[in-house]
Length: 299
Image (cartoon, rainbow, N blue to C red):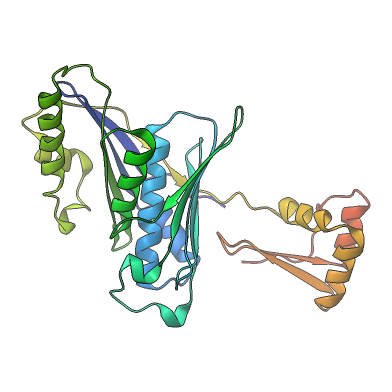
């Protein structure tokens, strides 16, 4: 299930006279597609949108063929936020939450106490990378900023926003020494671009990104690269669900069908697609017939 890209993209930019690069992300259709499949409370919507924006920023800043996964876990009212984005720039996200424990206006520390953030990069070729840090910050923007300062030892700042059905993000990162060899000049330059980004007002996030970047940095030589589109797409399928049953073993899979009253339902937690398997479907799976002949499936 997928949505064609429209207003969903990342755009890289660099400062020609400073050792600083940036990345902008806009997510409208893909964020809306995720929200349309779940009835998330507003605080959950906002955090999930911010995590989607952060994931897209990271994919935009990297070049790889594979999957990037961000997970935020806690022992609180929101035990899990999860977003995946492929090297093909297909993104999906989901959340788990306790509906009766999500007060309006709750802070990140209240919603996800003792939380931690895990970044996984799973390339098609090469070694899998995974890093985990505490959710250390008043909001997700601060958490990601702290994560990358610790892991990359480069000045990095994230600004994330998700409201009114739109998710946005801005990433600034100081580059290795090149255009500005003097330490003091480099630090002043970094503080300059960060100070201007801090002037972003909530109502400005929905504006055109080029207009907004010009407003922030019109006195600088900023070079914009081509936009890179993103789209919502869920990689679930009946075949994958059938493979999950096969992994149980034939005896346990058949027993599960009986326990479920003659039909097993497997739900995709990302897009809410439901796949049904009865006894004949399971028999076909273990006979090597695959999942071509399906029981009823529905959203």
